[in-house]
Every structure is written in C-alpha cells, then in structure tokens.
Image (cartoon, rainbow, N blue to C red; front, side):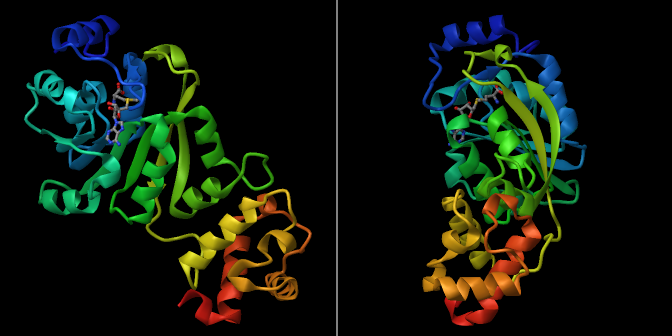
Length: 293
Ligand code: SAM
C-alpha cells in the first residue's frame, strides 16, 4: 500500500474498519515520511537484524523497517488494529504481529525463538504510547533484553530528562538509570503537527545504545538504585539528609559513608555523576554487606 502514513489513507482505513482512535492507549499516529525515515535511519537497522517494534498502530513504521531488516516483530495491544495490520502489511513476508501488551511480553523469549544464521543483531524501535514511556524503557533495560539499541519517539521533555547531565535542573533518577545502561543519542526533534490526532506536547527521537559493559563496577545494583531513589526522592535536601535512614542508617553512619566516598555531605543528588552514586552504593555495601543479601 502506497503512502500508508498519509492522513487521507489513515482516515480511509479508520472509515473502512470502523476504527476509533483510543486516547487511553496513546494512539497518535505518525503522518510524516521524513520523520519515519529519520527514525529508521537513526536506528541503524541492517539486513541481518531482527527488529522488535512497540505499538505498530496501522503499520507506518513497520513497513519501512521491514524493507531494511531480516524480520520485524510488531507488538500491538489493541485487538482492533490486528485486522487492519493484516491488510496494511500483507505484501510483507518478514513481518509478524503479536497482539499483546508490551509490558507483559517476554522479549528475551521472542529473541531466543527467532535467533538463526541470518540474524546477527536486534534493534528495538517504536513511536511509544506516551502513557507508559518510562515503564517500557525501564522494563527492557532491567530485564536485560539482549538488544543492541532502542530507537524511540517519546515526549520531548522526557527525552531531555533522559539525556540530562549532572548539575542540570532536569537531571534525575531516570537520567542516571538510563545512562547507566545505555549511551544516549539525539536523533530528531518532532513537532506535534505531524501526528493524528495532535498530542499536546512536542516529541523527540532518541537512540539508546545498550552498553555491553557497564560504566561503573557495583557490588550490588540494588543498593545503587536505592541510593539514587533516596537521593532524588528528596532532591532539595542535602545528601546527608536525603540518605539518612537508608537501610536504617543513622546520620553519623551516612556522614562516614559520604566521607569514605569523598563526597561533601552538603551536596545534593542532582550534582552527582554515575561514578559518585556508585561510590556511595559500594561504601554502603562494604560497611554492611548483609543489607543487600
Ligand atoms: N507506530 C504507530 C505510528 O507511529 O503511527 C503508532 C504509534 S502510537 C503513538 C502508539 C501505539 O502503541 C498504538 O498503536 C497503541 O495502540 C500501542 N500501544 C499502546 N499501549 C501498548 C502496550 N501496552 N503494548 C503494546 N502496544 C501498545
């Protein structure tokens, strides 16, 4: 089908199938070829890749990905889109559609099942449903899904928080968590006018290249993420105050931990880089190994 992304094609599909866009499923469909090409180019898909697409909608990104990749698996929650996708993707023999919630889909299992000699890489892509942007990203990263990268469209403001550096007002737990797992590249800014229906906010496309090796050595990832959570949970407080109470530790004990980590107790979480968070977490684990057991 030609120009699947054209607003009039999307309207014709809606009319033919009696399909109603669901606001609660974050259905804002992309209508701009230029942006579709930027996402595909930015994702660095090659003909030996398995592509997993999150939320294909009517399949605008899916068809472009299928032209570059060995195989595309598209996971779509809305059962009303399945007959539509059957029609819009019928010319492609390398696309599989799975009608499932991405948050309840075992991506590692899908990758394992599809591994063969003609596939050497795994790229995840998607114009994400914005109501679950962070849970989707964190699930893929925390599950340790063996993909090379995640190229996604998301709210501009969330993309900026993910990319933020220490010292910035928008640097927070999501910045540290994503940057621990990935290096982040900006691909494109996307105005809200290129979607049907138009969302309230502008968007960005970013690529997260999943690190083969983590940037810091940790005794326990759990302690590291707990320190980040406590630090940013009360971001206006000094570290001495925001960390007091973590694993039942007193102010005096946190003072010793910060001293051993070479960090001024009056600093705030938003000034710490990943290495400094790691140092605090490792000092806590060294002080009381049983906390994390
Ligand atoms: N890829 C299409 C495009 O660019 O036009 C659609 C993008 S739209 C922003 C998000 C898509 O994700 C919708 O098709 C929606 O139904 C789907 N979706 C929403 N929640 C989902 C979930 N939990 N699992 C899988 N797909 C989901």
